[in-house]
Image 1 (tube, rainbow, N blue to C red):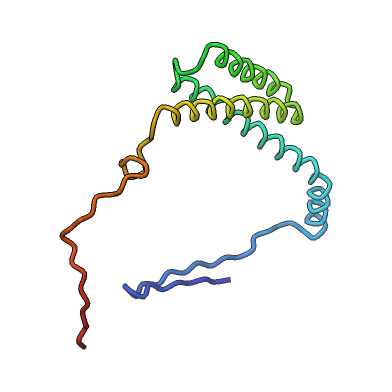
Image 2: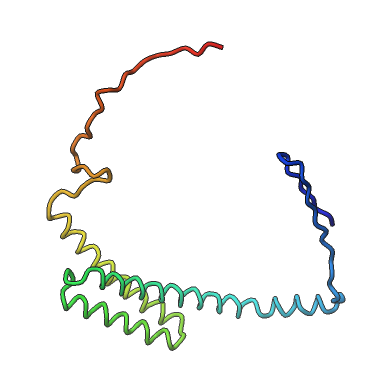
Amino acid sequence: MKVSARDRGTGKEQSITVSGSSNLNKDEVDRMTREAAANAEADRKAKEQAEVRNRADAAIYQTERTLKDLGDKVSAAEKSEIEGKIKDLRSVLESGETDRIESALTALQEASYKLSSRLYEQTSGDGAQPGANGHQAGAETPKNDDVIDADFKAEA
């Protein structure tokens, strides 16, 4: 099969030829297809386990970073609880059991969400927070009095 493309701006043309170079006969292809079908379930489980492990690693990293960033804003009891859940998740990760990793991950996420929501409640109770544009929430934005509203007609 030959594929080509021409740049309309410069007029340059490039092409490539793709040809089959398989030295496998039909029996070998059929055998490989059967093997792939037979291993599909194992491949799905391996993929699922890798995804769960990645999510767990990301949650550990994010939670540790959050604890570090918050510093003294977190009580010692809360910090100890979350660090315990991180330690539990790390030990379960070594076992490789997907179900146990999922439950430990859920426990860590719930503790982290609880901490985050409590901190946001505290900050919202401290007074009005600036809005997205840097002005106080609910305050009017300053108006530009130099604006002139006019109609115009375009002549051809």
